[in-house]
Length: 177
Image (cartoon, rainbow, N blue to C red):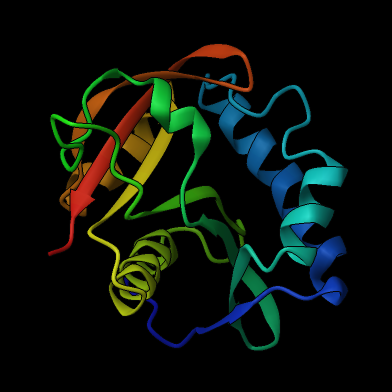
């Protein structure tokens, strides 16, 4: 089933409660899948607040409900220390011309309707509109649904990083130009 009737918008402070609730449900879903990602409470309340106030969260909304959320950043310093190699990094240094997509979660009410794919489609369009060469993302090595989604969207495995001081995060990149 494909869901194309969402509205994408930047999150506002009035969305914080819905975003936090969605992340709680996402943590439960990941735990059920045997994925330890976010089980320490991440994204923490201050992270949610900072991402909203910084204009980094995007909402996919259906019928006035927060159906999915994800964040975007012009770069991610943790990506500089990859054990491996990004597709768009040159021999002479690190490429900063990418959009990092993070913290994707879909409401259980809308799961299976293509919203995660929609989030990546929207992220790619945002990256292209701002002249980015690629889009990058990482996920926990045990987050198999996300890995499958990334492969289906044309992302390539590039290596591993430590995220928030923890290991076992694998990195993917999709070249846009």
